[in-house]
Length: 262
Image 1 (cartoon, one colour):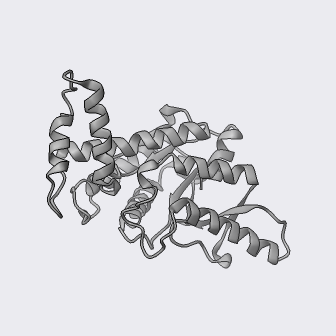
Image 2 (cartoon, rainbow, N blue to C red):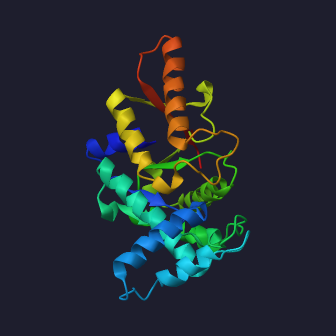
């Protein structure tokens, strides 16, 4: 939903982006090793105390197949994802203080298999919603995600918003689900369509490409061999073609959303 994200910022809305998980499991060892070696070369002997890059390099160089990453390696991989996120949101025009990282506990197993969603996860999501008191919540509805993380994150939002529903500020809060990485909504399921110009499509592409660790060799790609930015762009353009064929206005691309009544 990068195009819609950009439009909301340019229109002057108070926009926040919330990353529910650290995303560390999706960073390859080679990518982490590259960053560890750069940091080690730069810091020399004055290594920071929170991550010992020499031990990270040693671990990655000697890691056996299916071995769980050490805590330091997981921290480094999470920081890589976090800094890529900042780069993308800054490019679109969001202030750093409006970017939030929840690092939900269910994700932090160090393995592909995650823990079940727990009360602590839901409480963290509730806290950020209660703090911001949004009028609109946008969430990824890609339940075809082969890794399964999107579904768990979505269930955390459903549970949190359901528990918050009695609060007065929730009377004017709508939940919108978007797709794109694996499937798009069927045309009859779409409740809101946001048109994009050619320049907005390009801006969205560049923002996605800031997530460098998720390019070229995506770890949880599914059966579609295309990169994520290509998938999203193709699906947005295909939605625009479908709307055009229905006799509606012609656009370069359209981002589609389905409203969910929690």
